[in-house]
Length: 303
Image 1: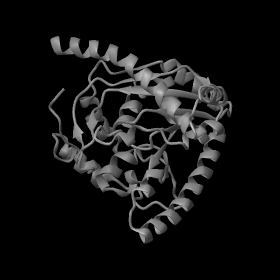
Image 2: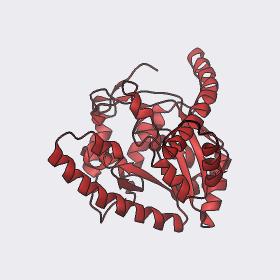
Image 3: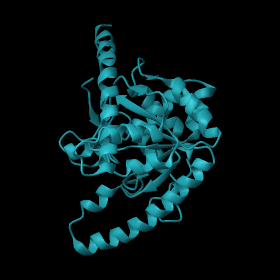
Image 4: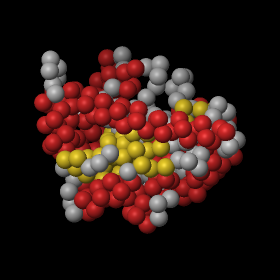
């Protein structure tokens, strides 16, 4: 699947331009609007793209675990999805596959609220046109502040980060009480092969596990929107691929943390150790699923 081309210059450029014209989302995020309800005016246009780039063999493995998780969430049990993060199309492809499962899948999709980084709102109108299709809570990932060198700018951003993230935490607490499933990317950013740090789990993930009752981990095999090394999201590379989302069985968050702590030998930071165990769990799922995906890719190439 090597016919990659930049998103903004792809064969879908006309569709994307219509999405930009339709977009009404709020670009600038404040502590009053960290919770952003989906605006689905562009959903049919997005689906034209997603359905074309996802090959027919794409699927969700372990879908029944998501259905069970949604039932638990409806009983007001705080539920969490920890998902690998490879591209800005991870969520669009996931929701498209969910809704392809009929009413049970739609109920799961409607119950999910993703935690999203602020760049998805404030980078560009193009990125926002896709982002606003999904309900989300917006926050500042820790890496955002860490990468700022200028002392004054760092101080200003830190002040804003504190306000927004406190508001985001309050929103998440309210949403889980309303029976929503909270979806979090443990790395807080897309994985970029040229920057190994983007594959490291954030120590804040331990706090999520401590605050929720049940969790599933979701590995993603395949990528329909490769990150561009120039870090311009509008120029990420579209390609067709088989997407497989593998969902683990449901685990109690307390048991996951307990088992992770039992394995901690010589690690000075217990929170980081738990985050590392999350990433190790996802890596094992990913490796196992990739064997199946390679077989499917080979069969598709021969057909």
